[in-house]
Image (cartoon, rainbow, N blue to C red; front, side, top):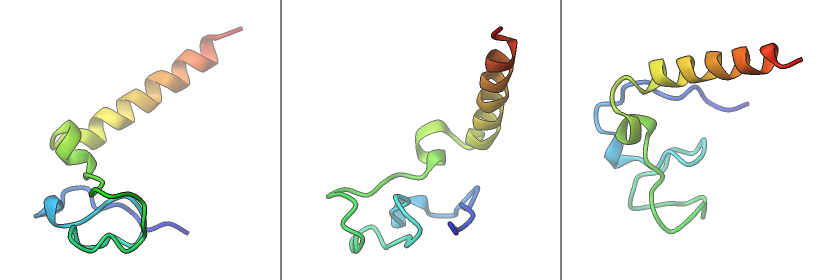
Length: 67
């Protein structure tokens, strides 16, 4: 079971968000890559969750309208 992602972390740059381990940015213990995976708020802004919800609804509407 995966952990619930923190919606608005105080310092997202201090953690790798690439897996459930949430390693410190300098540790990267999972071997998921050589760089830290950014939090969605770093990529999409503070309203990232609203954007993702709208996008999901739009995608669901598009697939239900297809015959």
